[in-house]
Length: 401
Ligand code: C2E
Ligand code: CA
Image (spheres, rainbow, N blue to C red):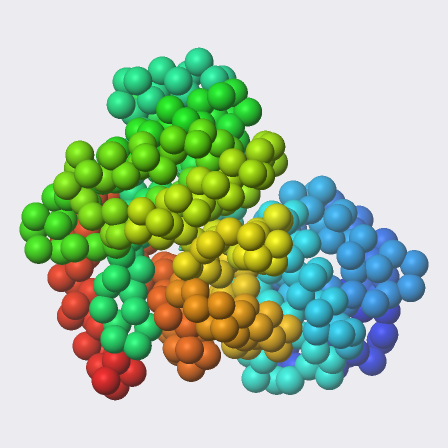
């Protein structure tokens, strides 16, 4: 493993090099300024596997260096080191990820040997796969419209589980496009297109009809799952929308109370009056309303005040790793307290490991959703996943008791 340490403090460099040596990492180069480090990384003659970047440096600082490292398409891993405030470190970590850099973690000075050992263990041995830098192709509206008509869209479903009993409560519908050439295209690559080209309604109608159809099949098989569907606010402009949804549920033979609409903000929201009218009438018909990605964008307190939501979805950026991070934990606790006091069911997204699960459970969150429980899957895979989960949920017997 080739390592480059960047810090203006010669003592810190020597100390870190010695700590790495103890861990058996001896191909270590040290650099006392960011400028030279940027040049070394850009030259890339013998690529480094791991960089330790101090954030506070005179001249070029660690944040500027990240920019250069990203521009050089660095493919190794990074560790951010600082004596600075935890929130600055986290914010820079986020920035690095947004640059598509692979961040192993952050270290506080003075560096604790165990924390360092954990990070060194986490250095991937295989060369970095390119999936971290998704190549998004731009699609045209005609292509998407044809895809809807030709039946190229497909709904995936991600399970939601009660954190106390480990029982499956429902699924969230997440649409994908089975593109004949590009394979499975994620929704982020075509939902915005639908919204800006007036295809939103057509798409939403397809998604909900297909989801209701699947829900009916699960119901017939003895699995009455709650069905969540994502709806953007610009779908909520026609005053007869609640009637249309109730009718669709009725035709499919699914009880309206089983349906939850997860409302995501759209920049195109124009008619607030219509939104409030529609939201109230959806609830009167027994249909659930969730505020999606709570705390991000416009998914805010004003929406909570005005719209009669009965569920609050915590965005994964506030969930995964929250218990190891005091600022995230504070935000999570405050959001859960808000949900509790307003009588909303709290559903956490992005539960990726057992630590997330235990943390949410301890904080009294109601439901969890995330890779730790199950990835989004086609309808046909759900029964097998359910059987596997029932076996796995026994692991949580003590927590589920
Ligand atoms: P969202 O509603 O916030 O959905 C959660 C996203 O997080 C999904 O991405 C899901 O696959 C992903 N996810 C789930 N568990 C984990 C986890 O443990 N870790 C991580 N890192 N990610 C996790 P996906 O399916 O790509 O959907 C992206 C967004 O597209 C959704 O975000 C939703 O806003 C939108 N979307 C999906 N389907 C529809 C739809 O039918 N209509 C509309 N309007 N929007 C949709
Ligand atoms: Ca959602």
